[in-house]
Image (tube, rainbow, N blue to C red; front, top):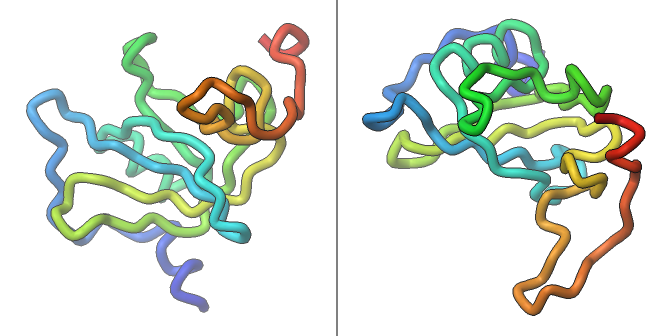
Length: 130
């Protein structure tokens, strides 16, 4: 079994600081290419479900609920590994992304430069999905 395989299905065995609001930032990164796909937040339950199921789960601050990435859109994130930063207050989800990660239709949520120019193309039409 590889180190990545051991991470999914494992228990959390490090101290994590979920802050006063019970949330920790979670960056999703393509496990193959290294592309940063999105930033979301996780609760203890979201992290536990991610590790149990092998599919990325997050906590939606706007909807105030736990959600599985791709449950509505079909654009899922299969979890390969979860890493914890040195301070124990941020997570890195290494994933295999199916379709676009961004609800606006782009592969990555980071599709705009600071000057407003767009990088890349939409991979799906959000009006057809949501």
